[in-house]
Image (cartoon, rainbow, N blue to C red; front, side, top):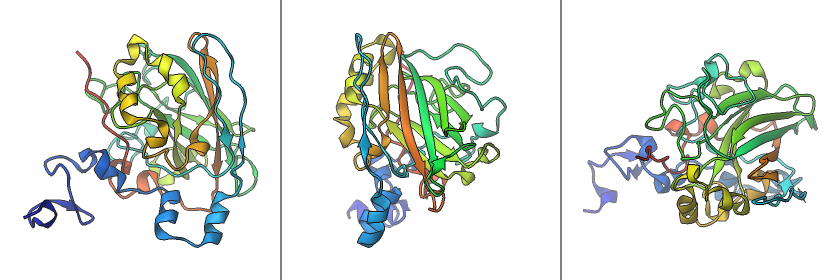
Length: 315
């Protein structure tokens, strides 16, 4: 009898679990990828009328700027204007999707996220200023007062609060409130690469600071992609462990299950160098008249396909 027809095999939404002995969030990237669709993917799968698709695609013009030059510098990638694609918040959000919620903790509103909330040693890695410029598309103006929650893995691919050995840490997580230009920025590091996903940073947008306490209030959920020409020399550094090998196993950013259909809207403009640090700026269009389709409302614990499993600490 085939696995598909075994009556005793645990299933989810009619599909047999790849790893019946494990939790739903640990079924692997292949299983995850079919579980949660972003709004863009749903439109294509369901065959929504061409008029609706045309509206969703409006304003997809691309602009770019040149990066600075020095040893190990990266050329800037273009950014597009348009609504930010809805993506999963992954298995490690600590936003109230499951039991963990760092958004309720004192000190989460901060600019420098390289240490835990209670201080301690900063995580190792190449310096990065990650900026988001949020636009209120419904009113065609900067989204002043919107709150952005950003989180990412460290140079070894570990997520604080979740990965073995760092469950008691809260680094690389923080909230900032947009200024009059709709801009927030975080002092962080270039993320490492773990098996199964292209290097990325997660973020959620909330309508205001008061709402940024639980994923139920989120109005946009997405991820930031980084270009390979920037990452290759960075991943040659010792603190980035197996990142080079893991990135090579993905292939390219276009092969990533999250970024494959929306890369133009999720790649920031980047300037800087390894020695001086990098600045990445992503334009984030948020249409408050549309219903968020990812994040905590995604239909499986942990927000669906988060992309791979961060590694256990290396000996």
